[in-house]
Length: 435
Image 1: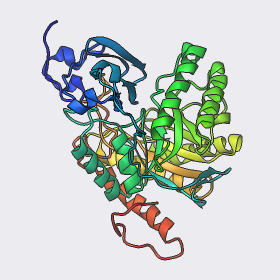
Image 2: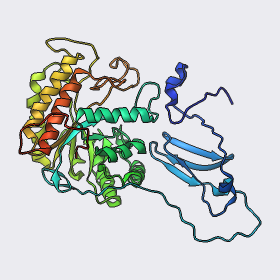
Image 3: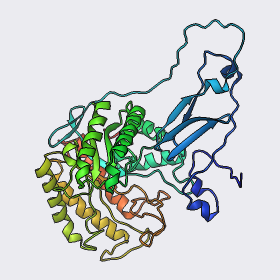
Image 4: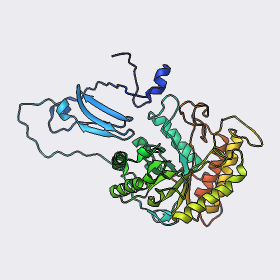
């Protein structure tokens, strides 16, 4: 009982209405939908009727015709249940039942993925990730899936010259991965394990649930050739003693479920204290030099970044991806010399990172992913001006100055990969897959 709202699905209910209480509400909500099934579905006992929920965050209880039918914990990933017994009319007449099969088409691609001490290999050739981190986020629709927005984002990825992204920090809609398969965009597929920062988060109960989530993620996405690596967490407290055993078990389990892909997690811990790093195949490290510390000191970035890479590689002898870096930027803010939050500062910070990356690219650094593709909404805090502004595009998908800098760099890297023994070609040769 109580007030109800018409609610499009998919969408984020927090962003639809004008009631501020709904905008900030976290808790149980009811969705109700009346569906009329084709008569054949309800009367032919040879037909299985399956209810599939694409995703519901983060704990769902499903009723069908008033009967509690299914519960699922986790969010972001699909779940389903056979509801034939709840919707089919049982006929008294005898029916001759012959062989029945369910089938669907599944586009597939064939490729191999391997990791050496200093390289990430796709089809036996060294691959360098030059791409972005993303969020499923946009004005009004929030996380709600939107085909128009998806096509726009992929056109921007092609314009940028990006060849990869990470599904930070949760699995994205299945249609996103289908587009990646079509466009040749490589994916680091991440589960929703973000915020593992307290000792109790590394309990056996949490670990068992984490393993189940990885099973669901692999089951859903394993047939997408675009997915080349699983990420089991983002910025966990991996320096805790209990994190070592925890990540050893989760990563080992993930590899048992899918032996064909490398596994990582994204760390911001100190290289010497990280208890989970020995078990990953690729070191993915986040750092925000001259942003969250040493404010404004852009001259320190190259030294700090070089030291970071050398320490990680000397300790673990594994390929490294700079999985996050960036600076908050308010579009239209300009300041020279560059000051924080100006477009000039974001651009200058990226330039310093790129110089440091180029020192190790081709040795053991195998990728760079900017944070973030586009500005996105967050909770209100004094540190956020209408959300996180580290995007190289605005939330409305308009480019900041840094987007043009990154475009020049990414097309240069793409052309070097395509034509390693020839002079540099035009940046935008064609809008074609980059691998």
